[in-house]
Image 1: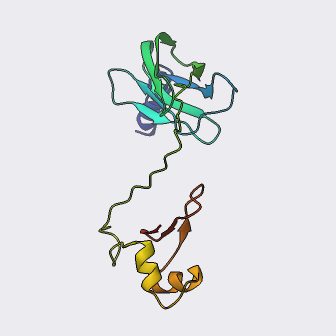
Image 2: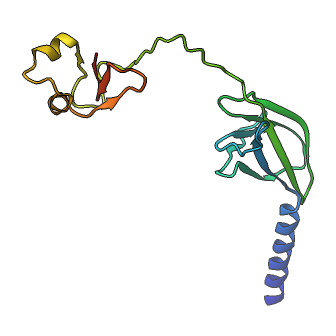
Image 3: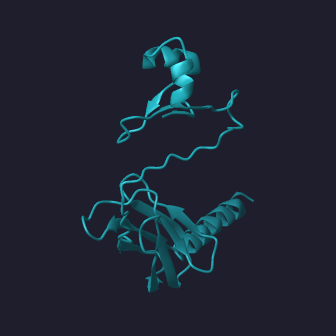
Length: 174
């Protein structure tokens, strides 16, 4: 009886090692094609499947236990052109290392001198609503100092580049 159990255990171990050796891994890195810096959070996925992952802080990814075969891999990240590579061959028991270089989209923002600040007037997550305070409102207050006004309305965020405006926690002072 003991010999039978040993035979079954040894057979299962051999079977499991054979099964696991029939898979391969895809490992690599996603980098910016211009400066060769790693791209953190890029999506690496196998087209036609639900398998994929995002790169780590070093731009690295790891897709383990892939069946041997030829795959189509798609790599994408916001602000970069999506890259699709065909004919990535996964071999049984081997690690396939691929470096993907993404080209940035080269989006240029043209500034014509106008500056706009957009914010919802009512934030559902906030307990209070936002206010817009004009120069006339400030003139009617008993104080002229910005620190006193901040004490009335709450937190302040200065809007850079706008010399006569401040954003007070959703309140815009002009």
